[in-house]
Length: 72
Figure 1 (cartoon, helix red, strand yellow):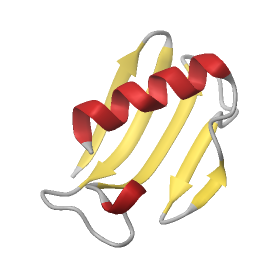
Figure 2 (cartoon, one colour):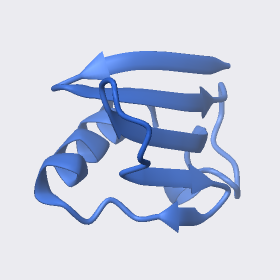
Figure 3 (spheres, one colour):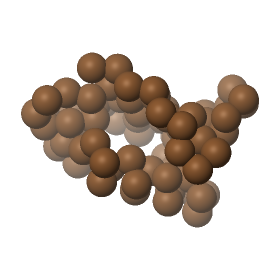
Figure 4 (cartoon, helix red, strand yellow):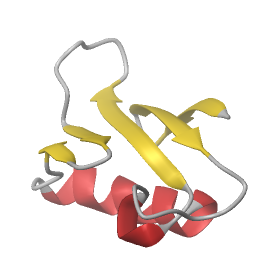
């Protein structure tokens, strides 16, 4: 269920289910997602059944889109 990956200099932690749900991002499989720069503590994106911190910066948004393609 919980996955932690490193991608393009970012640490991504997410809770991924086998099937999508109403709580997932875009009704998908990821119900929790956190993106941080590797070695940092500031959330650059955070989703917990809804957006707390939206990925607005271009590099973060690009990583977010990659994660969605891979896991959602």
